[in-house]
Structures are given as C-alpha cells and as structure tokens.
Image (cartoon, rainbow, N blue to C red; front, side, top):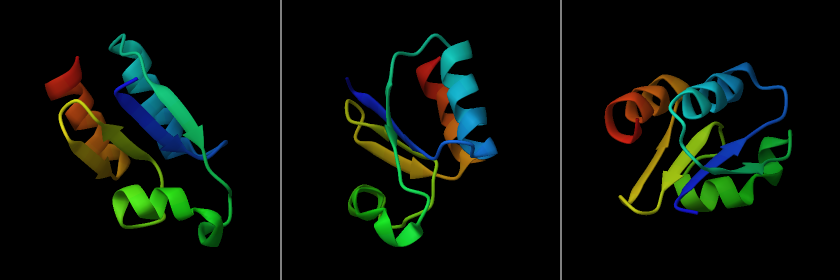
Length: 79
C-alpha cells in the first residue's frame, strides 16, 4: 500500500482526514498510534514530529502533517 495514515483513535482531525480519503475512494492503510506523544517514535521517525494525523504517500515521496494540508493534498493530488 503506498498511502499510509498515522492516526489516533478518537482524534477529530484524524477522522476528517479518514473521511476525505474515503470520500475520494482512496485505498490506504491506517497505523494507529499511542495517545502519549512520547510513545510515537514511528511517527517521529517518518515525519520529524509526533503529532497526528500524518499522511505518507510512498509513491510520490510525500510525507505531511496537519489535517488541513493533508485534506488539500487528498483533494488536489489523490482524488
């Protein structure tokens, strides 16, 4: 799978990104992260920070955070 979303269960910003991906019909995998920022080493490794959501598009070499940026990317590039 070339699209991966790092998300936190119950995070409203993560849910918005999930909805945008689903509405666009994009297949992706979700990696659920721990609620504690200090336990988000994988997110830090791929994005340089520990916040979510983070979208990784391996095919295009894109990694991005911030839900508004991710949703715009989904609409402009992936949809």
